[in-house]
Amino acid sequence: MYLKLLLSIVLFVNVAAQSVILYADTTDLSAGHSPHLTCDHSYDSLVSWWLNGRIALRATVNGGECMTSPTKPPYLADCTCAVTVHTCTLKDLSWSNVGDQWACSIGTWNGTDIKSNILTITVPAPKSVNLSADTTDLSAGHPPHLTCNHDYYPIVSWWHNGGIALRAQVNGGYCLDIPTNPAYLTECTCSYTEHTCTLKNLSRSNVGDQLACSVSNWDGTVITSNILTLTLPAPKSVTLYADTTDVSAGHSPHLTCHHDNYPITSWWLNGEIALRAQVNGGDCLIIPTNPAYLTDCT
Image (cartoon, rainbow, N blue to C red; front, side, top):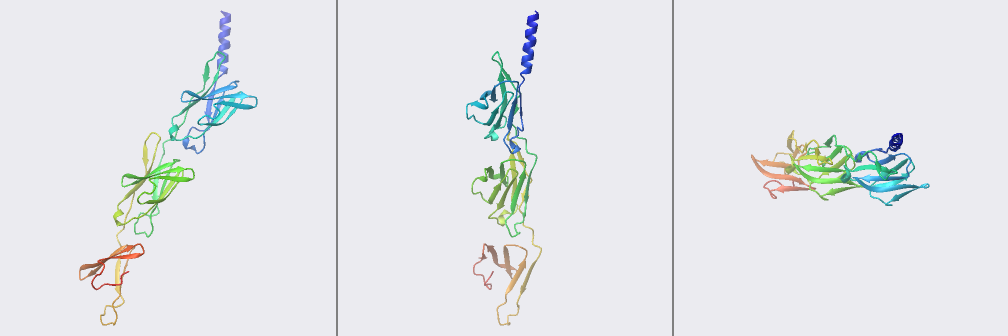
């Protein structure tokens, strides 16, 4: 009876002394650096690294070196070994790794494994997404430049009138756009906290267009920014003057119409529109092209 009790105490002390603890500097994929795992254990030269319930790597202390099997395991790099601590850095992680579970274990004298706690790879839900622009006024004289500020996320969706117009993803030092040549969006840039785009090819038909940006949580939840609406404020004043209105002056009257920043002006004769003149790049588009009484329009 005494022998059985003594054996039980020895086994209990042995198992208790062989606790295994796994911890990491981060389990957050949005942390900006690769998670570094540390497996603390009692004196044991062989540690197994577990990914989602399966052994991904065995690491053994071999003199002053660390022998790993397999030698190039997926997701694990820069592994080190010591008799009481083993470490590895996770590599090549993507959003598909959210939810992955890691653990480590050591073996006992009777062939069983003592496993550590489990660490789960996470990516916290973004807290906010904000869209701003240097202007939303189509009469500003330059294309609106949009900036989407967000938490640390590599992929942003740009929305135009309720539909996704572009997905932009950080790809190394580049910005991967899908589609590659979207309507209205150009010169898009990417970073993990800010995406930008400039609007292009806008006309008066785009007045009222609504723009937004969004990020998606790993579980599919979409967090959308505020909405910006393209506007064209009403002109405050239009003034017409002439170098003369006297038909006997000896030269044709030259008319000048001053107005706010607007691309289209209508010329009226006796209560009816005689001509519409529109800025068209560096040219002046005249409708009709050969109006009575009016010429040399700019």
